[in-house]
Image (cartoon, rainbow, N blue to C red):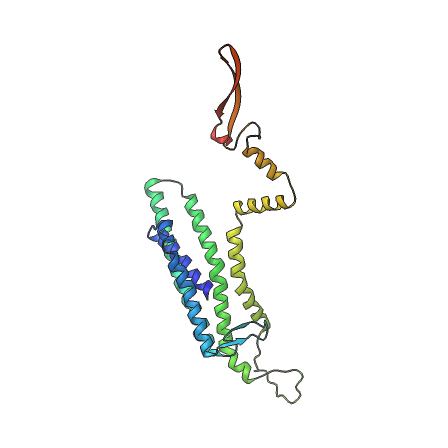
Length: 266
């Protein structure tokens, strides 16, 4: 539930930035409120469920959750909150995308400037929203599947080794593949979010330096030499040092002189 609320907060901040032109400082000013809502609401739900004794175990995964045996708990504390968070987050997300589309149209008509960066941002936000909304929609659909056929499963058990059991073609049993799909979609949201955040050039460079340090590579030494001015006669800021002979009181002295390289070489 906390992840769903964080999804709503993420789309809300995105809507404030894209639709109402809020700055990052203005959004960060309310960070305490975001954390308060994101953790207080699941805490209240957890306390309520514990008081109602609504926690039960999953016979397949062995994980304690809500609504495995109680349809009322599944409906009130799982399905309805998930649908609410997904709907609100999708509305905020669509509002932000519509605002960006309007900005792009204005930029093309009035300024005639390039909108490639803005379009890349829209594509990234759209892909990330798909990576969340599609698995979340599948999970909600599987919960509806459980809610619809649970009473039938409980009233009509199926057993291949029970000779006295009357079998009928109308007996419905749970589909194991659907349950496995539910666990997959529950986990894939966190996996894709982690990959989406960490798979960038800066993170890859950081991991590369970490492994080079562990394997005692020369990358760190070269970087330190560059920092202290031993890399091709340049310091860390790309300044090339040379020496000029100057006469002071009849004696020659070698004084360093700096020559700034063009920015393309920095």
